[in-house]
Image (tube, rainbow, N blue to C red; front, side, top):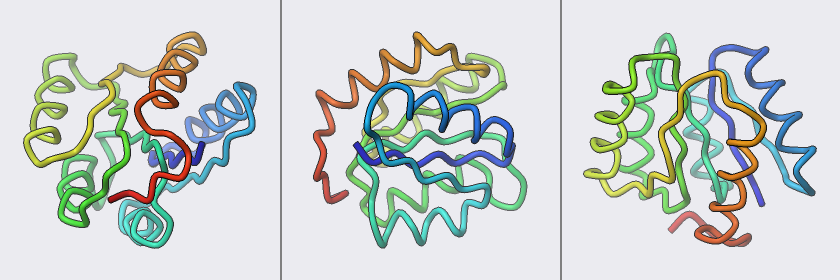
Length: 132
């Protein structure tokens, strides 16, 4: 499965990437900047996008709005340290724009939770998803 991670925290990106690689033969693309991630999303859409909400320059909400405008068709997991109500509201907003939200999770993400998300994504977003 191709997975894109978007978070401005490089340590969090490395941690998540390592956890995903331990779960199987997944291709992981990590980005710290939403604008660069949008280009990558358009050129080679991932099956699963794990996106932080709180980022400078382009926050997760703006990024998801742009991803929806690009008609990204893969699954999305929202990840943030913000209040759970804010996280759930962001998930509803993203779904209203046509994105397929797999879950909205608080940071830090436990390895067991990530394993469950990856298993769910494998069932809903099979490899080869072209993002449309």
